[in-house]
Image 1 (cartoon, rainbow, N blue to C red):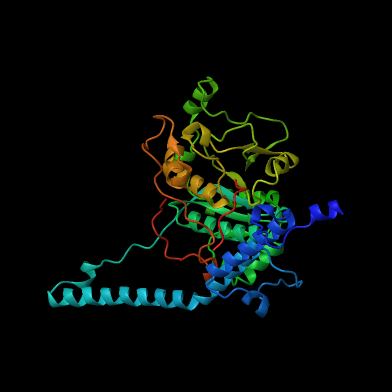
Image 2 (image 1 turned 180 degrees about the vertical axis):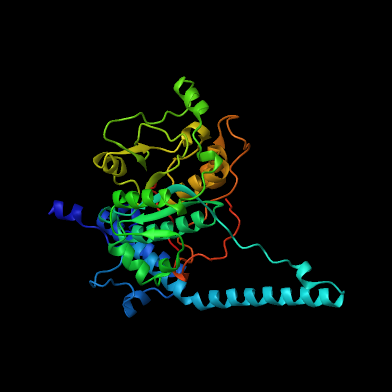
Length: 398
């Protein structure tokens, strides 16, 4: 009887959160999280459950992250027409300014063509170098990561297309959900891309086709930075701490270099008639060594970008696929890794040049353009602007 009395809780005793059982506390925390989501969305509590928005296709309640993602998608769709109207208004304002300037010039007796001369048509200069984005890693990625990869591929095309010295761009492993996304959500915008080769085969097949293109009359101009430089080779062999190139190995295809951070060799410079393969994978660093293993299986050279030799970073060296393409495209324009890194690597990574080995000084010059922004609006503009500023790190979704 005494035992029963000691186990009985008086009705007038008030219990706080610290006296609750773990299951009750956990349940209470879940309710608080749901309440917070409701307040953020400015909707009454329980609306999601009433209209079915809080349930997935299988009828199970959505998680906190799934609810947030759903609301972002709903907000994007809700304001899509507003964004379209704003773009239209900006276009009309720009046209009105042009007309006003022309009318003012005519009133002043000036030639309108002299007030706003026409810009010269964009004329890229093809060079005998190929960039291959290997997209044959879909089995290792989740659906949101494939969405992110599609944005990175789109930006890679945009960055290479607007470069002064334009490499030949190939996209291999074009199949599965990535291909489906471009054909449906992105409305086949890739079909309008220029000077891009897209194929279902692997990167080896892409490299073979790239080699044929680079050796053809359309292969491009041998610019100064691609010409062999024996002096640099002798300095590197002298062991003065500069990046070490991969030595000759029997049976290895010297015309293909797979870029991977696991490689023991550092890329010193880009070479003519060579294909550089970038692994098109977004996996939040779950998988290790996939690109390096793939390169060794196919007996091609491997290398990593010389970030550590030129940059002191306050965070990881992980770059997105389009950033790798942009860095190499920038190098083709300036021949300076330091300048290429400084113009592409985001400021938030806190990168600075290590020494006087580059013509650029100071802190990072330019910031990352986040992929996924307006990705459903279509392909990049064909009005190519002047250039501005391997990856397992995904680009944020829009």
